[in-house]
Image (cartoon, rainbow, N blue to C red; front, side, top):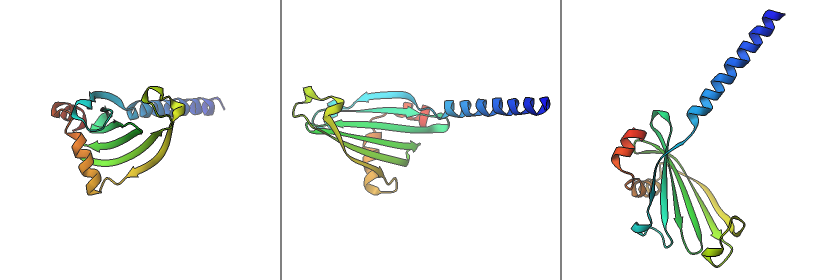
Length: 141
């Protein structure tokens, strides 16, 4: 009985350790951030954040701000090959940007993007160019 208990405790400890290690490695780490407002990609500004995981998996979160709302894109990729994407569109319920709070913004679109779509690939590449090559090579290749 004591041997069985000891074996069970050992298996549980090993499983917990493996799960903790897996969670640690699946975490996204912010490796680059850039304000894109000067490029006038949207009326009220824009920005991107590049996140990375081990083995060259990267994610680019891109926000576009307008007078009536926000568009948030998420692209997952390795090298320059898009593997997944999503788009969320929010609309402000208040007229003034200075009054925007979480309770005054409404999700109006939440969609997955088709990484094989030519239009999606073009949008991705248009934004991808704003990340320096040395950053991409270090984290995404």
